[in-house]
Image (cartoon, rainbow, N blue to C red; front, side, top):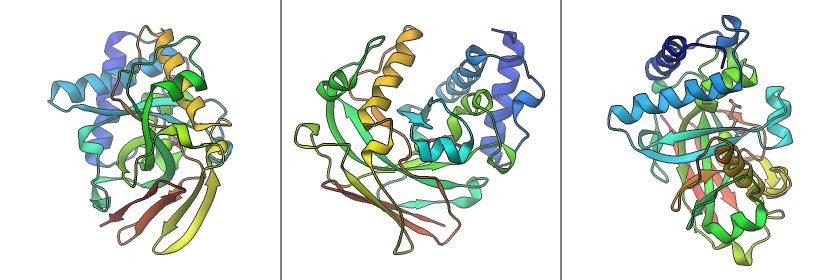
Length: 262
Ligand code: OOG
Ligand code: MG
């Protein structure tokens, strides 16, 4: 760790305030170029602690920057991990208020729900599939608190990987009958199909993103508990949205989920 506890708490308060007030900020590494990975996750942890202390509940975990399309779009090359609290959840087919966000984008993802705990190191795709209760379509709404979505990896980790809202729905499926690598997805905006992909875009297999999360947590003495919802990461580039937009994600064999921006 390069930052002291007071600096970590201050940066967490700053980033969370930007989130709650929907205003942007320059990336924090501009002022703290020496901060390290541990500092970045410590700031994210402090944001979670602040939210839990106000009575919010943890609603799920996420992996991000797990596809080449996303890594290329954001100019980075390592996956990142974050969390969602209950207030991030939009009901399937429900509304998302853009006035509460800075510059939202949507990402088509495959969501996993675990039935047993997963702990790294050494977690792999087969362990993830054995621990998965079901998978279902998920749209993540990301909203970097950084000006013009410009950040480096440490800044985006501290900012809880741009997490803002999410919706899951459709027809949850057990993984036993699926090959998630060839599972196709179509993202629609206002009735027009605008992005396409397959599960293999995410680290070769979306379960690999869940294994990477388990291994990341394992290195910190934590695990993915049973019953955890996890977003495995955007399959395509993220797509900007504005008020009035209707977004639907169709996943092969799993139905669809949607939300409306108002
Ligand atoms: C970081 C979050 C990326 C994903 O699914 O790749 C992410 C960002 O691009 O702002 O959630
Ligand atoms: Mg995402």
